[in-house]
Image (cartoon, rainbow, N blue to C red; front, side):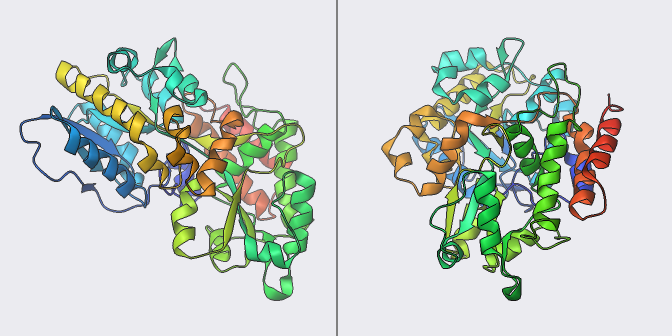
Length: 423
């Protein structure tokens, strides 16, 4: 997934909210990365939005597959994340320049399945010896619709806690916080306004699309009921947003009116002791040579542990019918299931149980194993058509609350009213 597109702004959230998912994949120009001739092999076109630091990791998997395959050649194509679903929509609706295989964020699968643009992967998986139980349950369950399986997971990318080890040591804090009380206490100890240093800089925009649902889930609630009706203004949601606002205006562990990516900038400068973000940040923090640690998201809610997550899945367009192509896709996916350690190197925790259990994975840096610890309680966006449109105004309202311009209850009431108007 790569660097989830942090630079969403509010307008982008409204437009692209269908999955909140244009994960990471920064915005380089379209680039086809397959190189040598397929030499008569059956060609398979594979689209991804991995235009960030994650792209080379997937390219390595594809290149290694192509070297060892006698029958199939995967033509790997990167489309910039900001353009990705526009290109996917165009290709699937017109049938022109359509890929044979593509990456899709898991919470987009219900929408495309509903539109009749994806085909089940059950038969292809069975022929390739791929089983649902080979993967972490959460994304498999989510991508199983009306008893049919539509997406083979590559990874799960939940929110994690990054913290500055040097600042923690200077403040006499010997472990990352695990609950709300510890979090507030640590953030207060780590805040020194005279130095321009903050305990936890509260983002007013992205990645609130991960943070707010996490705290709502930890409060024991969901943003939609079992019938698919939004419940954005539940007492649990109001409590979650009030807590996030209080970090700024009551506990004063964050500066006010944080601009987009302000929390990241301050973290890179050693002025933000903690931040909640995704595993896609690893490469940027490594290159900045920050002495940082990674931990599971503390239980900031009142009832249970939970964490908002996304997941990249392999999906197959409905119109792919060539038997040789389908066999090649199955062969490639089987290879990925056993060799996605190269994807884990990007900072992700992969969905393949075979790789998760391997010594190679366990020997990776602490981040990947921490991320994998959160799989048991990871949650995704509700599997509802047009969920992004329903929540576009939600994140505009949250932004206003965190800027100190609106009351949490009123903001969420208005977001709920607008969400109910979306069909």
